[in-house]
Amino acid sequence: MASDIDLHLGRRLRRRRRLLGLTQQQLAVQVGIRFQQIQKYECGANRISAARLWQLAEALETPVSYFYDGLTEALDRRDSGSGSGEVFSRKETMDLIQAYYQLGERPRRRLLDLAKSLHAEGDPV
Image 1 (cartoon, rainbow, N blue to C red):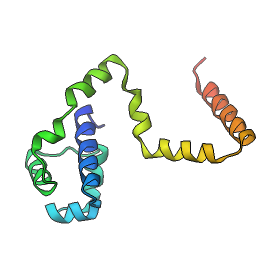
Image 2 (cartoon, rainbow, N blue to C red):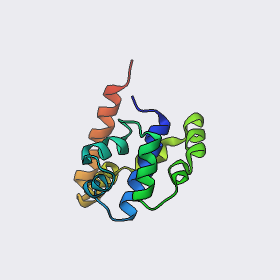
Image 3 (cartoon, rainbow, N blue to C red):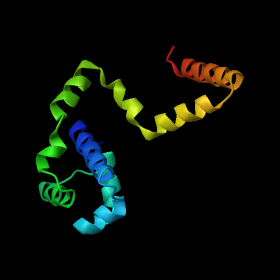
């Protein structure tokens, strides 16, 4: 299971890679690994070693400290229970919202009722 630090580093890695317009494959080639490893780093499934973090920072033209920017605040939000804003930064969430608003009013209302009923069914009694 990924630690909060691994997840944070992975998010920062993805953000910087996308900012530079690089694909996972392009970044992987630059640091001499397979793109699947970049995927695993970005989702926090695999830890990034210090040496690899250095290589990634070099390839992404950023200091190593970039990956740790905002870490303290992210951990504080987690500890205070206010990390729900991360849900809205996920691509899946944005895709769902866009699809939802492309529906007409009646289907949208029915979908919302369905989602609420599914959530209610999943609640422990």
